[in-house]
Image (cartoon, rainbow, N blue to C red):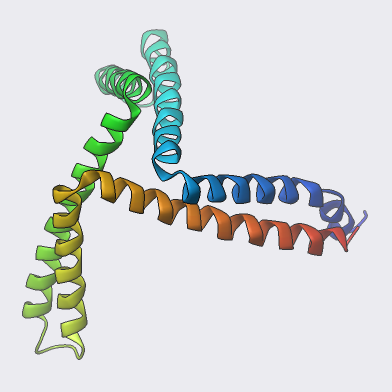
Length: 179
């Protein structure tokens, strides 16, 4: 039985393709963050629609792992979200960002309360409180200016995709050497 390294070495080009796509998307998101955010929400909407339709068929086929009611609810919510995301991706992204803002504010309050409660037990609790304050500040900024929050979020995703892409390209050429 041959070793796995030659087999992996022959598939180096798959990582190269992932890397190139990651770099292209990363650069696109950094250069045009609103368009990238719109594209991401639209793509998620299409996936939600597809999953909703499949779940709907599954619910009526009777072959589901959970109750039929839960599957129907999931299917309907997925289809509704998918329609909203495909028809109005920018509005959907803005709404999702407001949910993120609410979560950041709630999480920040929780971290501050937690830091106060554990201040006698641990050192550096002020860092937990500081992370709470920063979380609240970011949440408030997202509420005040959702469009700016959307741009910043798209930039972060773009930067992550760019780093991911570069790492995949490097890994591809390392694997190519195994060929």
